[in-house]
Length: 188
Image 1 (cartoon, rainbow, N blue to C red):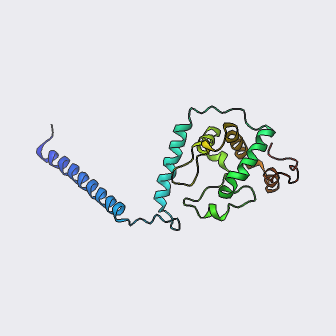
Image 2 (spheres, rainbow, N blue to C red):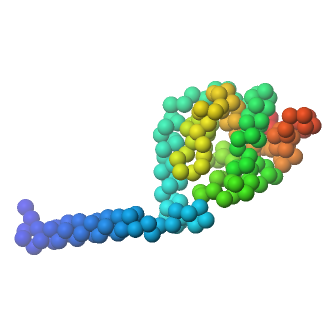
Image 3 (spheres, helix red, strand yellow):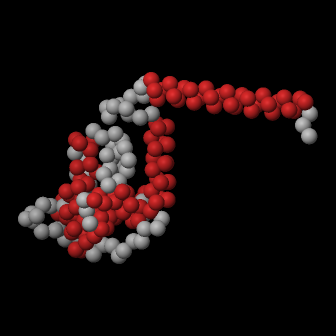
């Protein structure tokens, strides 16, 4: 049983925490409804906002992708399809080996990350889930309604092959139809 003094300390601590929480909530509402936070694409988020958003996104993707079954990836035909899809749908925002993202990609907030190191951050099933479902408020579209399953898996296979590509290999793989044949030693 708590003494009167101990009870007073506990009561004071609880009331202090409640008051601090109410003050933080009021400050948050003032920022929200006052429109003080600049949401313009020309203004960067505060570092802690990036941290919170990136951690939440990573945890959400891992959670939702855990049931995705990964098919066999990486045969040449699949990589050719993936290269064409990447060239037409991904390159302008994400760039590639030796190819910078376009001005459209560079002007987005958050700026789309390069995918040449995606294998270090995401498993194949997670890349599939991101490609299929997109990412809210990031500009990353959900390709589920625009690409078939085979095309989504093909672009995942291509993204997973990109770290081994030189800039020359990447240009050869993503060349438009009628361009010179693929360079030897491509993404295999």
